[in-house]
Amino acid sequence: MTVNVYDTANQLEKEIRETEAYKTLEASFQQIQQDEATSQLFEEFRNLQVSLQQKQMSGEGISEEEVQNAQELSAKVGENEAIKNLMEAEQQIGTLIDDLNRIILQPVRELYEN
Image 1 (cartoon, helix red, strand yellow):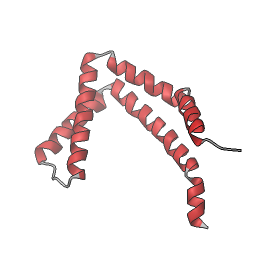
Image 2 (image 1 turned 90 degrees about the vertical axis):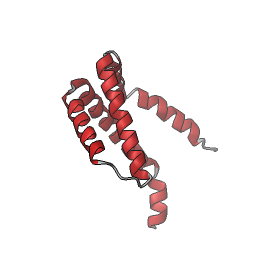
Image 3 (image 1 turned 135 degrees about the horizontal axis):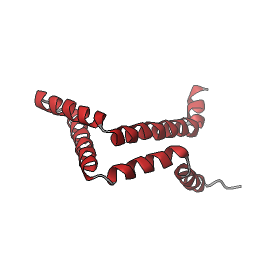
């Protein structure tokens, strides 16, 4: 019997979309998209995160001004209920994906442990 793990992966992708964690994430994201000010704040926050991560990965320093801007923006984001809900939903889906990765990689871990 030939096993096609890609078929299994595609089925898993479909099933993830049916989970409560994904549905909550999707609804939270749609809520943000419906409010222009919240959407802009969220986009600004995401862009800042990406920019700071790229600087760290390339070994660049982060200026005091950038740190202050990040703190101020984080405070604004923390006060926005819709964005807080999205971040909680992201954590839930992240936990689900971490659990799936742990299960999927079990054969490889066992191979190296033995």
